[in-house]
Length: 167
Image 1 (cartoon, rainbow, N blue to C red):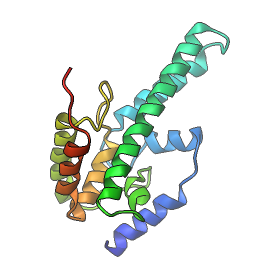
Image 2 (image 1 turned 30 degrees about the vertical axis):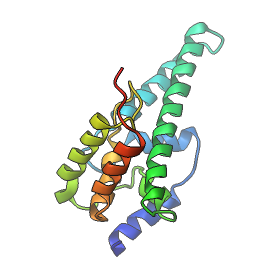
Image 3 (image 1 turned 90 degrees about the vertical axis):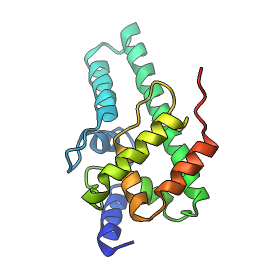
């Protein structure tokens, strides 16, 4: 790992607060042009929920949708972490998965390869649950794996561990 990417990871680890405050920061902005559609969706649900009375059925439905989306995202992150651990990244798994507003891509030359591999993971594996799009945050993770020459191994393990089940 180069000293530049170590610095990036160190900055990300400093911003490892949890809860709604972090979630808003993590998903609402990045320093690149990559969109965070999934984060916008969560943010939109939260904004809608905050505009309605708490003791209403609409609030309950929105709260349920927010909870469901957060659980799905957590499950995806857990699946990615399991594969990273299988690849031998016991100490680095959390930092490889850390994406926040300070995150920058390691190498713009790898972006297309990272996107292509992420598309393969999304289309050919069950790593992302049905109805949950592959979050753009994982472009950053895949970019890191490309830089570490582990991306193809990650895709292979994802296909083995989480095969796409057609219904």
